[in-house]
Image (cartoon, rainbow, N blue to C red; front, side, top):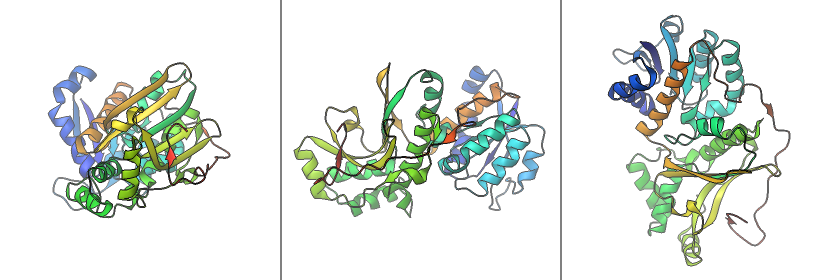
Length: 340
């Protein structure tokens, strides 16, 4: 039996516990063993939940920790402690991966354990592992992706006739947007995700602060109508271009000829262009309790198969990129056009 701990009993943490409980038979077939949640940690006083990280990291039975707390602290401190004890950590925390992923990956390598973060980008879409395992030989020239389901839901509803405020309110009522939606609608969430993707495919560390970032708060019904009349849709995209390099988050005009045109509601779509494979598209639910939790559990299984060994993600030895271009908008246009 593989004993694990979950840090943070929020939406994703609760989802991880649910996936492990409900899919135990499938886990056993894949892993050849059971996974047991021995501890759940939360800063709140909840019956059956521990509050002291030392209980977890000092327990020799714990082989994997699922960090689903979000934010930098105490997630960084707790992750650091676990990795130093040789306990692998699987996370959905894109903010922590962006800020400290290289350092934490190096600590994992030093202590013969792993730091995996499949769930930090694309929710339940098996994206990062595919890049790591199936694109290692490819020279990736470009990534263009719809990486935030909240923004995509809002823009889809604006296309259906709602104004921005009404579409945002509906997204909040349905649980797709936070009470404070700034990280989503101002593009910061997408910026962190595209920075992680750019780092993985380039072998150089791009940070969130290096991304030219613009959200969707200035998009109007007139913009939506103008795009539709020209056979296009407005999508918030994260775009990495190896030539430059440049990393941009902004609303783009997406033509009907692009597969991203038809990615609607809370779904994500990511197109990766390699010099041999050409264009490959990933599509699925990019957020949500169970899709994201499923990605965390997939990492848990991979770590459980490699106890005592480090799974190389390409993050532990990369150096920061020295300069990143910040391309300006095309002159005379409010929005960029994908493909131009």
